[in-house]
Image 1 (cartoon, chains in turn blue, cyan):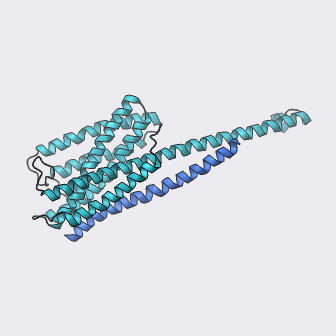
Image 2: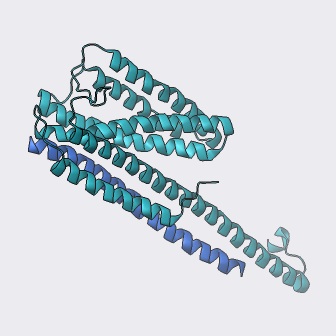
Image 3: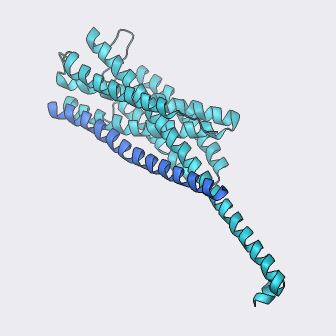
Length: 46
Length: 260
């Protein structure tokens, strides 16, 4: 029974972990790119 | 306009969710008493049932947001509807997997086809699984949002209908957790169950806000790229104009014929 319980909670942890592992780095890289682009736009305007 | 979630508020939500998950795990495995009938296996319910309730609630929320989109034609509501359904689909996969694990341990089968609760959830899940292929098969953004909203409203209407149909069904063997009499849970079990339900709602809201923030930044990034391209092409055309002016002064106007 312990194996089934651990399996069920393991599924949840694995799903949440992989979801965050995909979402968070992608979001961070987009924010970095956005900041760099905004700097370039400012420099081009000047 | 995309809903702007301040970064500090989002960080607080993330911290609250992490804390609530840790507390919920402690309550489930330390505080909640073991079930006399199912023993340790009953602990799966504290995860499986809140996940199912939040997934179905998310599908309904997706439908409500879609109604708002159809009423106002505001793309923000379409984005909210899309994210609500997207998150509920992920939770739905979790519900089916954890439910199958529990069923295998309790009934000796991964899946039982004559069980109304299981089959009705699968029907709702598969119905919403069609949402994304339908959505991304349409290229025009306006039509995509409108068709997806109509689908979301229709599919969301199935959720309460399915719920009622299952409750009215006679021959079910799936345990009832939420009933007027409190099901078969003791006071401590019920407290832990409701805490787990609140934690799942908090987690859903946090992930929803995170997705919204990610989509908002993606839209800003696209706009910034376009703006930079426009600025650079404007700059290069100004450079060409000044070259043309200089060239026309010395050699006359630069035309396709003169270049040839």
